[in-house]
Image 1 (tube, rainbow, N blue to C red):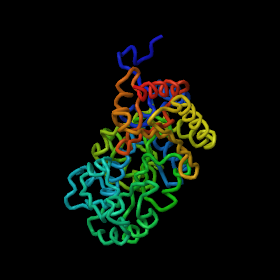
Image 2: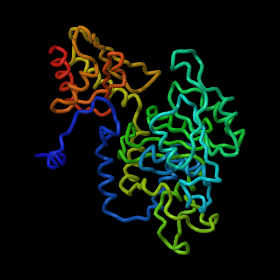
Image 3: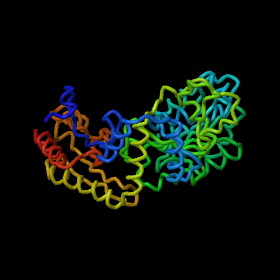
Length: 401
């Protein structure tokens, strides 16, 4: 029987890369899909549902409050807006016009990435600090805490920190200088799961807001994410996201999410209104998050390792190519298979191999992040049983010409 994509005439792919948005994210567990299906058959007050979600997210992350967003980038936009406006509905109504407001966000130059467009979308100026000599090869230094401290002024709304294992300065150092000046720190932790311990790590280190993706390792809906942090900032984010087409006298949001008594009136639809998240995504994210935190990390890692070992066995030994399995449990839960090519001997490049894999039938998508080194990477997070053998067979065929 044809699946829904076949009925639409859309070819499915084998995702041997990972849960990237352009590849439609992760494979949701059946329990998550069933929860979303059930959620779709009822109507609820979204603010009440978000208030319930806030309590659970606070429990899981150690934050004062939480909020389900339509992805990590939406969380960055909402979080930035919250830092600009606080609970002032007049300021909320003006965004992205930030004239006369705190409208600068500081970021280490080495943390800049395509996703910080979400931060800039709130109407702020992104202030880059430091020079990443360690990346250019000209030296060993990166942005230092004193440079962030020197950049803080009366217009600083927040410091944005992108969390990677190699990020410098440390989050603790950034928090120290920011908080000394009364400035909040927003952490972009979109892809920093697993380990599950990272759900609490950044809040424990002093972050004021943290954004996670819901559609990657958590295996929730692709259009879902988590924003967690200080209660007042989550309240400001919610006010700039929710549908507020309602009389103020009629409006009765749960006080645990929004303290109506602190407001002179409700703001207009906020800058985050286009980032709508439905009841299905909220329920799906909460269900997936529960499954994620309850799963034994060793069992999860073992499942992924078996897929990578099956792929390595299916590729086997081939001329002018060498396989290696990155399987350091101290560094990551996710084992990665690397295929190093002798591009000169093969007569084609690692990027050529990636393109030939994806252009075949079915399309097979590998990770191209190291093709400049002649390396093709394969990840386990979106592979299903039986697919490693299909991928391995195709790779062998292509390598043998």
